[in-house]
Length: 469
Image 1: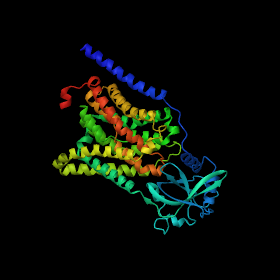
Image 2: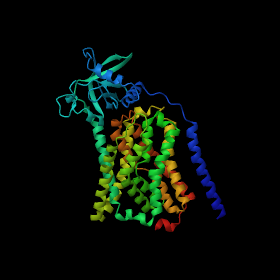
Image 3: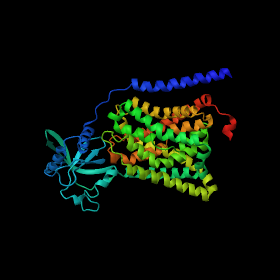
Image 4: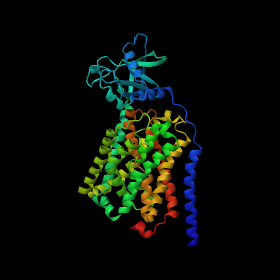
């Protein structure tokens, strides 16, 4: 017994040293950040001015010059990309709103869009190539334009004019529809496993539920905030930082329940934690994003879109699934394995399709280098580590601690990636950094989970009676 006890102590120390050493290795291997490409720099410059921290006369000049351009010698081109909109916060001396629309190629090059003189031509339904322009912010579009260079204050800017109506990239439309439908049905499947008893568990296991939610929505985003500042992502790569907050402020999912099952942890507690966090995410996910990203350079969180997405893709399908479980319990039990498999397939589909669609961005090793991957892995691994430490400090048994640990480190990455995809164009996330962070986390959490399962056997042993109960 003494020998086993000493072995456990040694292994626990090794685990602690490994995790702490991992964090310090990230700090020591931090590389200097390279400046962004000119397109991104231009976007940042104009974004700062629009937010009132620069000379707004440049925006006024750009607007004025766009109406004087002679397009006779312009070059025609066609490309896929996105529209960005900058709204000036300080526009004294101007008539109406001072807005700048930008076209962004997938390569990152920025062009300033010259608008028609009549603003009515921008409205939905207008007889114009520009009709419904602001709605185009949400999607990847194909643009057919003419381009010309204009010198302003000693700098050359590229201006563009539509020569045909932009249209959404077909595969982009199919991809978005597919992930929305898959995530919706995955959450319906989660609802099929839930009953009111799962929510009532808070009265029988209050410490586990309360601590688990504190770790999920309190500790994890706070840890991401600290690591993001410590490693410089907040300052140099703000959308990676937002991705860090997003993935740690998202609720648990079917994956955490699956991993808890394999870890022989308290599955009932895991399911209850997932249920509570899914409901609470309607409040805490947008709140934490707005709170921790309020002062991030060039970032504005579309809180309304985040709330709507969670309501439509989390709460509604959960309610549908629980209602089906209440009326047709046998059907729900038979359908559960199918939806569990769909959850894994959906996650892999979103990750693979998203990565294949952004391979050019992952070639940017300054942005997505060793430190980036180390950071993402540390978020999930440290989550499981501290998710095991804190419960033991208040004497929660190992059976429940395993579940809390998994719920802390494993998140609904599919939901995080879906939110990232739906808001990235609106926010101006040039390199899909929010999606990349969530997607790599979705892969890393399986590795971290497998490692933790092995360590639990030695560090968090459970009695056979607990597992079978």
